[in-house]
Image (cartoon, rainbow, N blue to C red):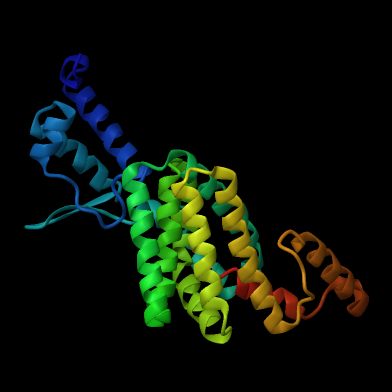
Length: 284
């Protein structure tokens, strides 16, 4: 039974709109992407073109797509910014919030790498390989700005390859808002640490190899190791003690104890390590 047979005109519009929403949520249609033509969509959904047109108008009324005269219909970034729109300014105004971002990234991106290794399509794997090759090229050219930008794109594609709508939404909304910070500070890490670019490249290669080989546990470990490396390197810049990749909780506890000893009531100026974690949250 086709979509046309299952419902009346209003029901068909609703059904088509839900199918289009799914394409927006699962990353099939990404922010900035041009939608297929009405004719193509009508054939795909087995409905009349006016049904597709009305479904698109409903999505446009909600700000999810935008019609550009003479160019077509394009996906907006509403899904990305709608969830976390206040965060960009909050993080800019309150740097102390950034230390939580790295902890969040370690959990979220570890999970996206795990599920990408399980669920990535051939197209996903092709994109991951292509970005890895671009990362290799920018490293060889010593183009640190392009390298950091490709780094951020690779993380986004891995999130898409997880094929989990909530992981993708959280990644693109929360981390997408912070992408400028990630890119800028990713460049800074590469400039300030002589061996960091080669280490980061090796980490990304290990991560991508695990995903392509469909080894989920290795992929998760590789992603978390990568983020921990960034955190440790930034920590070295401001004098953190040497630590392993899972020692974050111990470091935070030690810093809290030290702060409590130095400042009555445990309040006062933000410790240097705290500021370092804030910067670490913005790279990788």
